[in-house]
Image (spheres, rainbow, N blue to C red):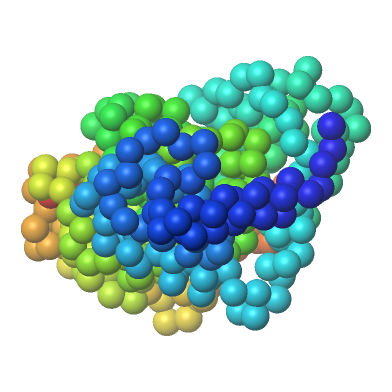
Amino acid sequence: MLRSDHLQGGLQAALACEVARASVGGLEPPCNSTRPVTRNISYVRYNQAMPNYATFLPDINVQPALYPLLDALPGKLAQAFDPSTHGDLSRWQDVLARLPVLQASRIDLDADAPCIGLPGDSNADIRQAIEGQLKKLHPWRKGPYLVHGVHIDSEWRSDLKWRRLSGHIEPLRGRTVLDVGCGNGYHCWRMAGMRAKLVIGIDPTLLSVIQFQAIKHFTGEYPVHVLPLGIEEMPGKLAAFDTVFSMGVLYHRRSPLDHLLELRGLLRTGGELVLETLVIHGGEREVLIPEGRYARMRNVWFIPSCAMLEGWLKRCGFRDVRLLDVTQTTPTEQRATDWMRFQSLQDCLDPATPALTVEGLPSPVRAIFLAKN
Ligand code: SAH
């Protein structure tokens, strides 16, 4: 069945419910929640800021270490989803509202392409409608996903990165996890597939957050949430997470040591950092600071050697620092597809010398480090 009104309807119902509760002075869990309330939070403020975050509250309300995040969030959400700050927002929200409502007979998040629903749950017309709507959220950078038989063939084969690390990190079962710079949340779903207790992703790019919400529309409620925040907007020194991931973010930060310190402040004592970033081949004193663009990217600041990065991690107080993997990025992993029709890696490499970028710099190599707080 195709329905286009469920989101607005859901919002109205949620607001009606919350207003009714608020009018009797109640700060209670949202409708349908049976979990205990341990903190006085205004659900009305949350639902008005963004209805899709209603279940965030019961999920983190039982974790006192996360209360500072709860306190800061309504204002942040209202700001991020203020229609006047983003010209495309209403178009994207319209896409979300038009997604068909379907029951997924099977959800498998522990798969290279997380699989939500089987082709038999829908029909060819519905699949075409899903594909048409999701393609309006172009470009899909991270994936792949398989949504009711629709294969979202994103620019990145994000599954390859996950394969390189998932067997080596502390098992995520029962852990509270943060994914900093999570994009549309591909790896967040994989973390949930490893049975993490709660996964919070943060990313300041609003289209990525909307893409996450499109996927979540089809999964139903999972303890997986993506918030429209940069790491600098997180309450400092939360010391709340068992595992913190920062993948593909460090080189975008102007102050990489501050980024590492911020990550450490988010981890509980003994928690694990999973850090993935661009590196160069070289010794402990070598770091590339591109003068202009790097592989056509404008916002690349520091690309250290592995030895230098290891030194940074230790200097910032991490222990048990371990280099897990170093991999050259190839067009098998990053390429243009029907779901990402802009330039991709191939267009950023020197056609005569693919070991160099078009700017004449060493072409992308990525390393994964593990470390403990
Ligand atoms: N972690 C994913 C996505 C990496 S792309 C992966 O490894 O596949 C880098 C992401 O970092 C982008 O989605 C970008 O929006 C996000 N980002 C940029 N600046 C950030 C900041 N200050 N805090 C958190 N995320 C940031």
